[in-house]
Amino acid sequence: MRILTTITVALLLTASAFGQMTQKLTATKVSEYGLIYNLPKTVFDVTIEAERIVNEPGEYYKYAKKYLDEDNPISERKESWRVKSVMVTSRGVADESERYLMQFKKGTSPYLIVNEQNMPLAINTENVPDNVAVDLPKAIAAQPTPLQTAAAQQVISQEMLQSQSSAKRAELAAQQIYALRQSRTELITGQADQMPPDGQAMQLVLDNIAAQEAALTAMFVGTEQVSTSVRTFSFEPDSVSSEVVIARLSNVNGIVDRYDLSGDPIYLSLEIVEKGELPVNDKTGQAKQFPKGGVAYRIPGKARIAIEYKGDILFAQTFDVAQYGVVFGIDPSIFTDRKAPSYAIFDSETGAVREIGAVKQ
Image: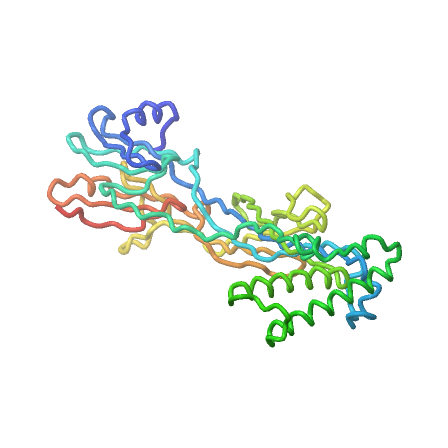
């Protein structure tokens, strides 16, 4: 039985808190043995992880071949973005157009567990399954390049600072690279004039040599920084199959919303593959009628969600979707049977019945 919002407010004021995210509503005389709830509709969250790569040329890239025999140093600044991963998850939100009154017999006290949006989770049981946590990607900041470390300051000699010639500075930098390599070899072979006192000290010296060599080498070959950005966009399906731009990827700003035309579109396509149907009477072959005073639930449909970028399918999966289903009802008397009351557990994303059984006495 569908009802008006004003009645809902009056009845929910009698509900008692049950946990942080749920409420336990009991059908009593105060509430006229009726409980109010909303069926859910399905919403999709599209989480996009994009990788940013920034290449910066080194000061001496023109001399990379001469001194380091490097054929392909980075010669100009370049920034690029790519879609690294896409994840689509579904969740239920209250459908304000599907609000119902759950009416029970007088003198009984069944109860309903609802979530914070007043959507049904269970009847006559508090054993509500937890939502499965989804491991979503997290943004990763760029790490400092070799030229952004303390070692980069250590390798700049006084002679390099005083020289006005880039060719001369490159020559001095190359000489330092060779000297560092020689020092490492002498340490490893035990031929150094002053050997570290123990293994830990040896490792510290070797790490410092490696950091200085990396900084000097970066002055010739350039640097690359990699970071990731993560954004989530929500999509609520309508009544038909569709294709929409869910977001865009910009070579300058990374992941942007669909209205920002600086980026290339990332498409979401939804195809309805199955619509929910009412149960059929075995004798007549006709669809069953909604039970009088029935506890409304959904029989969901199915849809295939795909995410596409530049012709590549990045994600494809079939989901149960409340909007493509039908509403049916459970005879409320099974929940108030004095000898063998039943319980029910519902899917919070679709409103479907997940389980029905007898309450253990």
